[in-house]
Image (cartoon, rainbow, N blue to C red; front, side, top):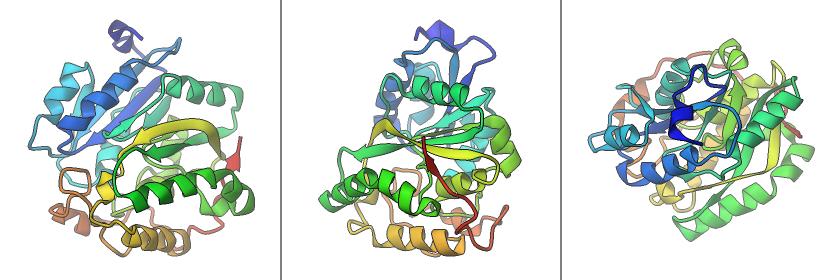
Length: 274
């Protein structure tokens, strides 16, 4: 899509990309977003979550709208981007992720064809990072259709590959910024109470697994995931690289106030295959 089309208003879809010190990866992400093959207009918002590098400059260079969010944490960053979104549909991916050319078109087709759908998630491939993390990610993604059929309450979309209806997002209460991990999963489960949240098994994005290079066995991530599934909260601080959204030095993520904190998210929402 031509860059001039990105500036047309109002856009049908807004893409939100949270970023913290991602000057090296962000350009590849934005190139893939600018190259989308679709007939509708869309805008790109990059949320600078307090970067000390040239993340904002890179975003401006690619024509993205930059929103600044000083409160550290991916929950705060995504929420800030969604609050500034103008699109009827809001999609989100991460700064170290590359999406296919039909990424937005697939979202649009699902939302236009299935009016009862309020959220759509896809799958991902780790292209780098520890071998164990890549294998675990590949196994989990190939099992997604089975998980959705057998235990739909166990699946929700990932932050680097999902889209929601703006009205449904607002009605859900938005992201919980008290979570150190899983703000995307939690949103998906709460959206299930408002309509259908579905899996587009044909939507694959390529993302980086380097964020888990200091937690190569994904122990903390797995514990946080299961605690979120069964108890509605995370208890262990993820060990992530400092150049990403979850740097160890983000001390203020420990002090987030709870927003719409459910006592138990299990069985309160079930995803479906499209």
